[in-house]
Image 1 (tube, rainbow, N blue to C red):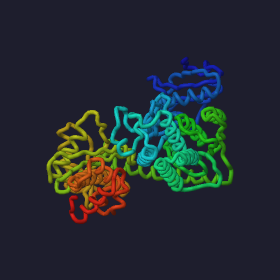
Image 2: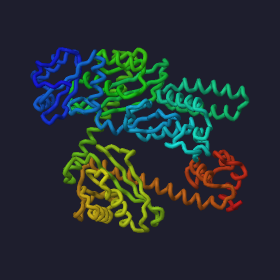
Image 3: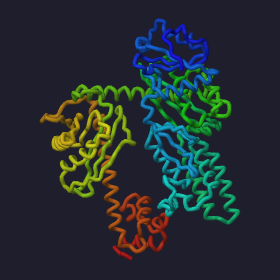
Image 4: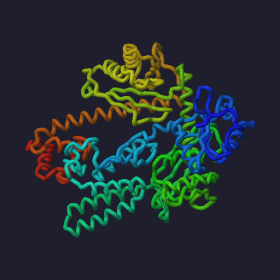
Length: 579
């Protein structure tokens, strides 16, 4: 890379330019057919205040020449991902978004990841709803019975309860396994019809070979996928594959909404925050380059809110897809109606994010915090009479739940002593230097729990702001004050939401442990019910109460169960007969 200070010394050639400050930090990365002419335009007077500030910090300019504009676009995208320049329009907090990854192992797995590696794995995403991603992954694993283990060192429990084909034990050939992975790939592309067609061929083949049990399994797979298709919330007459991209802006913040249409159905909606000041078309172009730079399915048609002037983007995407990609902005018809739907979603999301930002600013002022509480953690304890006590940590980033960062703890303190349990939870959460410290800690409880948390923080040598919110009156307490403090409605609503999330997470874990213990004590004495059947029963019915209310037919239908054992369980819950 060549570096200059005088823009007149830049070449009149195609390539990428990089602005750096006096500390050698990258301020901005751009591309142009003529680097000299494009960079010279930055030195003229601009109305954009953000651009004027950038130019005041500019110290030197690097450039890299490329053979053509498409190479420049790819290089620009890679450099933006590498340097994350301050003044480029870019995805905000993009490292938090999860992806689905189909690994490039001999027998591939399907996992959730937050980083894109330089490998030959296939990636789908990013997704903004972590909970939905986890549910989808669980559905995929149960539907296609692909392996979950990181090491193939022998048959595991999943293979024993028919949740895995057990390639580690020769349960399936590599050729057949890779065929299943191709169907998983099609599923994540939203190409459900192709998956169903392949399964129907396999089902007919199994029936012709009189393999009726295998045919029944495939039939159930087809029905499960059809249920997914029926749950899609909108459909069109044409079997089209499209992405619909629209945005709304406010100051330096923008929200882009992408609607994915596959086989004529809206199969997904994602929204992304972008930061950076530019006109709407430039923001849209910047988003397209970042969004499709990550390995993902590229449809044949991308409808955008504003015409994209950079034709090289379509050429680049066509090359990635291996077929023509059309990017256009329809003036009317169903395309414009879909764009309006996406735009309205973006407007609502941006408005909601504005309210959250206001609430965070209110918290900073009203609680006298040293900085805006971008990361807030809520802590709660759940137990009944001190039994099976659990603790939870819920995490909000920029006022939004980050479920992937939630943590739960088995509390060792013997109860009932809620204060001692809270001290234990706080110490275990914050005593490690590796734990990222939040801008604010919220304790579910009044002055007593707050005092216990504060003691634990001090003994751990941790100095972070901490507040408590009482359960009944929902008063907010600060350390050292005997009376609650007044907070605005928006700030209180945010604290309540975090408190409720921490409470829900703690209670769910407590209930799971309690049900597991109860299930063990209830079923241990029934002949024929071992660890595998206990687990299958709990997974199927969700609780001991559900098992107790089930009929013999429902019990017998559980994976790994037979009718004699189902009858013993049924009699046990009704007459106490231990079989």
